[in-house]
Image (cartoon, rainbow, N blue to C red; front, top):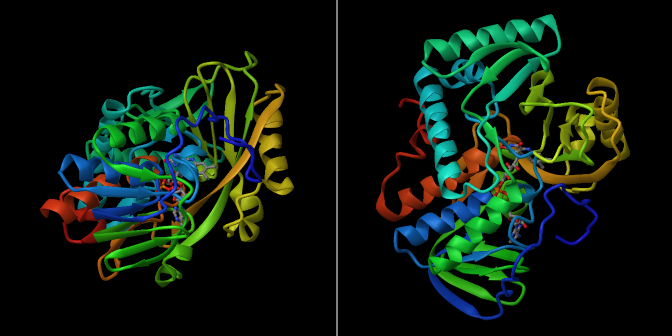
Length: 378
Ligand SMILES: Cc1cc2nc3c(=O)[nH]c(=O)nc-3n(C[C@H](O)[C@H](O)[C@H](O)COP(=O)(O)OP(=O)(O)OC[C@H]3O[C@@H](n4cnc5c(N)ncnc54)[C@H](O)[C@@H]3O)c2cc1C
């Protein structure tokens, strides 16, 4: 991925073969807008079900948050499980959590390269947060989900055994390759300027199709302004260090109510993100450029709390979508135009699930992967 204003992520790898921009009128059953983890998951499932697909991205495959995130693979939605139960009801929260656990297995099977399943930690940094962890543990155990109390080198809190990490950009590239092999037509550098029933326009081409799926997390409210007030774009930022032996962090960590997160990669480098609440108003933006305020906060966390002094080699930002409820968007926004997004900063697993789920639902009527996202009474 070329250097750009958004900085260079730790995951920077050879972007692979360029997929040509769309410069003609193409015809397909489905047009998928956005080739991140969610869109590619939709494209793959659509091809598996026999639909013809054209996929479009304004940049390159994995150009958005899918190739620029923290690399956590976590079961559940953005709210902690007990908060999800309180907000969505027990049966619905349980169904949502179960679907994401299965999706995690699916991701590990579909694109195993770079996936590691050693569990994750939720670390508490106050008595109040520790009490909240205890509540989460109780509710998860009552519903039969794997969770353990953690008290070890990395602090105190919870250990979730089924979670993991991955190399997010590698997954995008692997998925794109699979999609091509399965007969999908993918176009990069093809910014979508207009979406309507049966037609998607880019700067230099058009796709005529029966169904449009917009799989864009950040900027969803820009492409589909009807979603303003439902999804709001926000910037998230990260840093990464050179490989270091100063610490041995065995598990990826979510700390301070999930505002901060870090992991040590197999080569010893550390990827650390968060601190969004340090400048919350400024971070409600589609301008995905690292800022001094957040970058300094991340450095403080790295130097003072983790005690790591290795040089910082990468700084980057990307845009994601937040909803007020913590539930992502999945629905028909315009006639024939469906959208998924608004994962509230945790879209690696849920985005993949909804991409697949929406494809299945629209092609063969099987709504089993999306139903609890839509109906409260399941
Ligand atoms: C710093 C950071 C850390 C994160 N950490 C984690 C984490 O550890 N775990 C986790 O689960 N989630 C994490 N997330 C969230 C996660 O990355 C996203 O929710 C997820 O990647 C969204 O994937 P997506 O495919 O839906 O969207 P994106 O990856 O954003 O893909 C959307 C694509 O649409 C394209 N696009 C946009 N507009 C247009 C247009 N007009 N025309 C054509 N194409 C367009 C973009 O170029 C982009 O490639 C993090 C996000 C960030 C930014």
